[in-house]
Image (tube, rainbow, N blue to C red; front, side):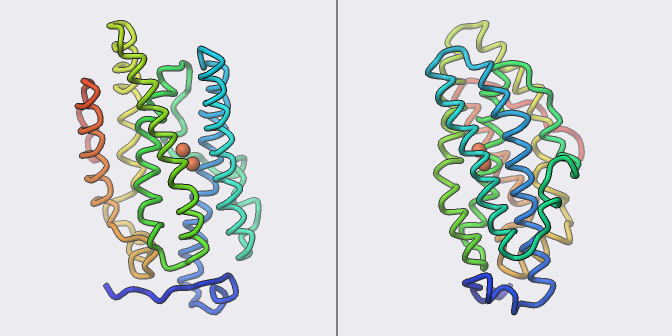
Amino acid sequence: MAAYPEVRTAEEFRKQPEEYQAAVKKILVSHAINELYGAQVFDEPAIKFAPTPYAKWLTCRVAMEEYHHHVRFKGLADEVGVPAEHMDTRNKKPLSIFEFPLKSWEEFCVIKLLADLAEILQVEDLLHCSYLPLRNVARTTMPEEKFHAQFGHDFCTELIKTPEGKARVQDAIDRYFPYLPHFFGAANSRNNELYRKFSLKQRRNDEMRADYLNRVKDLLDGLGLNMPALPQAA
Ligand SMILES: [Fe+2]
Ligand SMILES: [Fe+2]
């Protein structure tokens, strides 16, 4: 597929075909809403589960950054005229990954380990996207998403030092992991086809999902944890 020319500013954006504008807006809305959902249902509530002042401080930092990601993506969407109510979690059904009811510190650490890795893959594609303001936001966001995934890795490493802790982490993985493969979207998604046509994303949903599953396998192998069997039709 030939690369779509770079679109450098919101002014240039307004001169693009309607289909291009709609595709960019969809990506902006999905990131703005997902960052906000994540912050509301996981990161902010996790502050009370964090077991030490140090863990609370780092969790506050994660929550602050996730809210900031929402603010950044929403800022881009505002600039191109997306109505604010399209990015309000009160008006939009959450993705299934946000329906997991967070009840423990172990679960939060597993969510950071696995869900933030999924987010890293999404942001990886945006690092090369044709809409430069979005590419720049992806560049600023990436090191923070890497910090979140590392946060999950570091605290899971700490937790699995005892057999009880390891059992709790594995149990959280077994319950949360099945939500994740769907995060990458349908195999024959029309949106994904448009995103690739306009050089907004590089990979097909299935390619991204396969890459993700390989990375999760390596990550869990490295920690001595098991990757649960894949849900059907993932
Ligand atoms: Fe984020
Ligand atoms: Fe994150």
